[in-house]
Amino acid sequence: MSNNLSKDLQRYNYLNGEIEATYHEMAIKLGLSDSAMRILYAICDNGTDCPLQRIRRLSGLSKQTINSALRKLEHDGILYLESPGPKNKKVCLTESGKLLARQTAGRILALENELFASWPPEDVERYIALTETYLRDLRGKARSL
Image 1 (cartoon, one colour):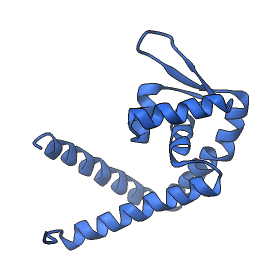
Image 2: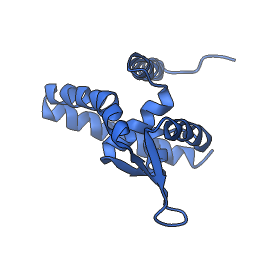
Image 3: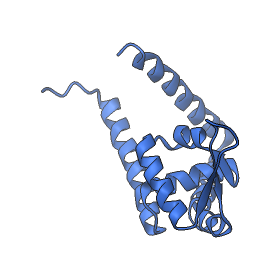
């Protein structure tokens, strides 16, 4: 198999991998698995509870991985599930879950906010706009697979 990747795509893939590795290292350093961290991060991003569907979208994790991680976090007393409707499950943090989330995902969110605050606003806007364009175009191309 030949390597037909452009230098730009190779660089992008490298950077994307390094970003993912950094998030993994932060999760480990804070005593959580990647899936637990992504779930707590999604909940923190939403407040103190979050619809399960939103967690799926924000985390990028498979249903099976989310369900396994939720069961463990629920067993550990970190969160519980509410079912306001037959298909609308909501994931809620317990008091100890709120503390854990603040000490872990909350710290990462604060770090990310600091990072964006240190950039010129036009760089933040450009970065986000380019990321949105990449996502939109990638989704369009993915439909043709």
